Figure (cartoon, rainbow, N blue to C red):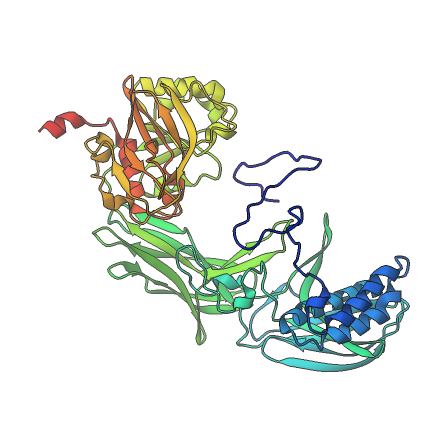
Length: 590
């Protein structure tokens, strides 16, 4: 079950009406039946009448106490299906009828690897288990091991008797050129918002069919039926018991950069750690970094040796940026033998979905910024899934994570600015009691930056801001939408970094969300933006002077832009942190 985004809801019972609008085509005569006139039976397929006749009889005479009694008729149906001219329906229905036959016979087939994963060129042991839990006579003629590139036929001559288990063993050789296991839509580089999939038949599949499987050829009622079973790995978990997971093929070496984005705000070099993971024993080779033009790395390469399977080793490079603002990608490369390995392995393992592994390039975005900062110490109350603090640290801020329960006048006084993470006022109950200290901090000269919250489940309402402020569902989803400057001469747009229209280029996913739509006159709206066809949204960044300090509320998606290394987002947020730390009005007049 999807459990993010704060959209948990309670269920409802009883009937509920749904309303549909006819977009194209003719209105059904019976408006209560939107499928009226659409033939969904076997009769719409050439050769399907006989199949329908047999299956109608199976359904009518099905014996729930002895499902295998239907197998002879199901086998006849299978023979008719595999001879259909309609290739589309033949493929779909052949797979379905075979599984129905297996279910009615209680036919269990599995193929288990002795290892959860292996590398190209390796050999693994397979254990196969077959059992027929019915009185239907069956005979195993052969099985074929497939590895995606070739196959091995093994002849057998075994009766599958009622409830008598048959165990088989064999070895499985993985081709040296076998493709790695990964999400098929990530095998080729896509474009913004689009994946590149060469095999159109796979589009929409949550998991691609495995290249590694065994086909059991079993004679049932004089008909040899091939049953395909994917090779899996099985183990016993102390709590869950028997657990199955896909058998996967990995590169013999993978690597991981220290961070997806590395920010350089000065021309000083940074140490860049790279972790090396071995998926085979006695790994040796050399590691190097591929860097953008104008950047420098030292050393050029680092040798590695004798890393055992399952172990990891960390090597450290020193990377120097360009003097001018620039950005690019650095990629880890491990040369071993005559092959170069460039992949990061991500393993996804949740109870509600099959375990999956993803192989993507092992790389980091590097960004050279020329930011001027005023103020250094930031107190940060983390929100939901909040990574902003670590990226503020990368540009030189000293960030302290604040436990909301510890907030006091004395604690906040030592910070140049205090930031409240996304949805903190939706998730941190204790902030109801601590909001007075946050507003008092502003009044005494502090800067507070509050990032987006939702109006639903808002825990702090009346005192969210020092002046009236109403949250809404206003958002701008087009990350390329035009941005207008409502207060171009304001301090936040000019000091210590000049903000230009170019600073809103390269944003990712969206501009922002859950903007306020009403606010007191004390607030100054800074920006205006909107999606195509919608009204201008002016609440993305609001700033109010309160006492000696500044209160800022923003729905701009800094939580997305900073991890993506968007220079303009860093620039604007730096100005927000720096506000009030100079005599800006005097500087403008001069």
